[in-house]
Amino acid sequence: MSMTSSLTTPLGGPSLPQERRMVTSIPGPRSQELLARKAAAVAAGVGHTAPIEAVAAGGGVIVDADGNSLIDLGSGIAVTSLGNAHPKVVEAIAQQAAQFTHTCFMISPYESYVGVAEALNRVTPGDHAKKSALFNSGAEAVENAVKIARKFTGKPAVVAFDHGYHGRTNLTMALTAKAMPYKSGFGPFAGEIYRAPLSYPFRDGLSGADAAKKAISLIEKQVGADNLAAVIIEPIQGEGGFIVPADGFLPALVDWCRANNVVFIADEIQTGFARTGAMFASELFGIVPDLITTAKGIAGGMPLAAVTGRAEIMDASHAGGLGGTYGGNPVACAAALAAIDAFENDGLIERAGEIETILKDRLGALQQSDPRIGDIRGHGAMIAAEFVDPETGEPDAALTGAVAKACIAEGVIVLTCGTYGNVIRFLPPLSIPDHLLHEGLDVIAAALAAR
Ligand SMILES: Cc1ncc(COP(=O)(O)O)c(CNCCCC(=O)O)c1O
Image 1 (tube, rainbow, N blue to C red):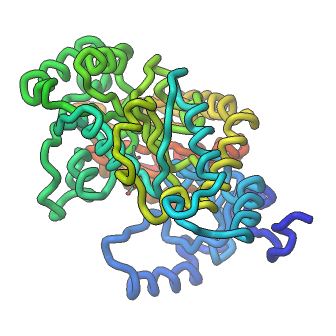
Image 2: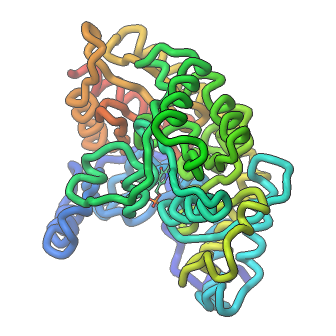
Image 3: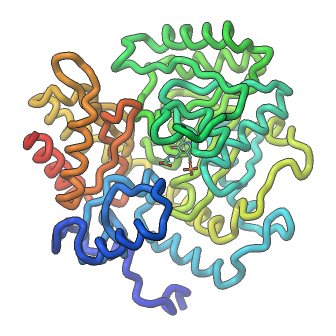
């Protein structure tokens, strides 16, 4: 008997009607009640994008407490790639939770943590010997990747890039470029963190090789390879605006790191697990990172994160040097094993490619008639449109925010991003049916045309 059959009738998952359904305005009365309670009970710094009370989700929709069904183009920021409440994940969670929910892997180890490490060592780029360590959040994984790189090299400095995003802890805020909302007022930040220029083809017009030369020159002059433990970069930047570096940029950085005993860390927390039309975005650029950080899509919505990398680097930490109470929680690991199995065997990489075609075709057609769309970029189901003043090329954050707000009011959850706040990003669940993706794009086109 399925463990989930003992639960109340499952509300979420792919069985939800795959439709946009507007029963009330957004937010409806039930959502307004929750938002009033949120304002009274939750710290003001914890914002929200969609003013709804989510009660169910699956396929390509999120249903709210007022009965509205909204098209989800955000996947909870690139997390529910498999589709919310995926049956394989729900079953795995229920079965594990019924056995034990926590022992602390550093106290009483269990198989699912080792199984996830073995899976990560298998599916991440590179055929060298690898090891992994599991954590809870992306920022925690990034913090530990930096710890490991510093221990392995014996050097303190770390280079991150313009427009980069790596988390909200003290070190990861130091690595993150954008001040508001992530950093303002939360300093001082960790030392020995330096920033290099990124390849941003739409704005710098440089080749990958030239952009790499510029970055490497700054690193050599302002940091020095002898002081540098690691370079960390998102192969396609997430919060910074879905910036795809010019061909050749990333391989040139990797080559320089290899020649200078600098650990190359690919932060694939947002790009990982089929999101970009490959298992990992590093594959798209022909690079093999020394360390890779993963989270978000890894466990179908359960909080799990990891550092995976060259065994000799991962083993540089002394016994007891890595860990944490919840790292690799067994319920999250059970979910991850189910999720990784689905990513490997359920055609999701191909699905991401199909979604890319729909998005780029539709957005490209829009751009033909609306030059305010300055750039369309991305890979797989990680696509973005950058909005500009067509006369000056200046970022148009006001238009971007107005379009996104209008879409949410019409029952389409879209997310914005970018250093200049002028990027609408598309991160639909890979489980979204084509008709909903098209309908979401119809709503965006109408919102744009009305402004
Ligand atoms: C590349 C990359 N590295 C690291 C992180 C951090 O992952 P955590 O799980 O949010 O800590 C992210 C998280 N991105 C979304 C954060 C949104 C927000 O907090 O407002 C990322 O994208």
